[in-house]
Length: 219
Ligand SMILES: CC(C)(COP(=O)(O)OP(=O)(O)OC[C@H]1O[C@@H](n2cnc3c(N)ncnc32)[C@H](O)[C@@H]1OP(=O)(O)O)[C@@H](O)C(=O)NCCC(=O)NCCS
Image (cartoon, rainbow, N blue to C red; front, side, top):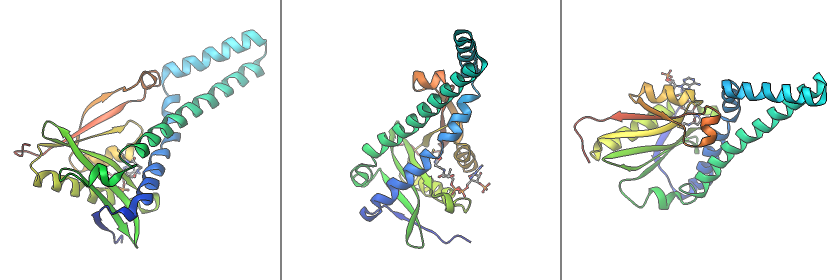
């Protein structure tokens, strides 16, 4: 039975939350790579590489070698896109957590603590239009499946209701299946999907938007 407690972020948590966030995001790189490989235009491109290399070199082995090289380059591209996302977060709000989330009463940053260690995190900030955005949800691998993320979501929803927000919104990605189930399980519904970058369109990598309406509250 997990015995965690949820509390506000403190400056001593700085390194722990940055590491937790980075690990949680980078672990999706293999799933993102597998997802990209399922895209028909990517498969066609790999086939084209094979046919072109085989025709140019006159050898099946070199054709397959070219495909292997293309796969390695694709993996590096996906891996570096994940790393870039993490770098961006660590260089913006997670560079100055207190400044980003503790200065305004409309923002919050919670951590889940177990045995004195930070094992989960989530943040919120106003998204405009009376909506609150849930951000930076992550739970350490070895602490998953014990309801920590659900408890963090409940904290967010209670905060949003208490402050009169009309909805909580968030974004996740098509490969973050555990997160999608988590959010749907606590009442979020999918309201949209988009390709924020040309690269995402090419690789069929969708960003999903979720929303949890809170009823009468309006802010
Ligand atoms: C998504 C994440 C936060 C879930 O944390 P968690 O503490 O394990 O989640 P909980 O134990 O509270 O589980 C809540 C629900 O999430 C879903 N869920 C959790 N892990 C799952 C998995 N591996 N596969 C499918 N659904 C899963 C289930 O619906 C679960 O409800 P149930 O136990 O009643 O079936 C965690 O896996 C994580 O940190 N992942 C990496 C970072 C990430 O993707 N963050 C989301 C950013 S948008």
